[in-house]
Image (cartoon, rainbow, N blue to C red; front, side):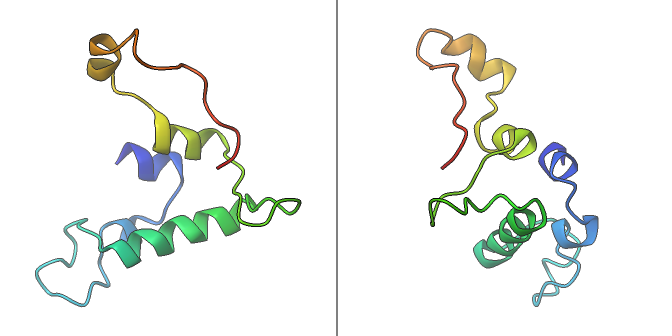
Length: 90
């Protein structure tokens, strides 16, 4: 839920209310294709496609958090193993 809030995704899309399978409707269990559609829509809405380097996506704060934020538990366990720098594009 925190990721969908941060990216300001439509609740109905995240909850799979339009899922083809009746068992998945409203559960929030998304297929790979549904996840990809949500992410592509976010990238388009936020204009994150890098015009100077085709195939790269610029990473804004909410997307960076969604992709790279480490939980407090993981941060404590591996504080010395992780580089704390976040990427600006992928």
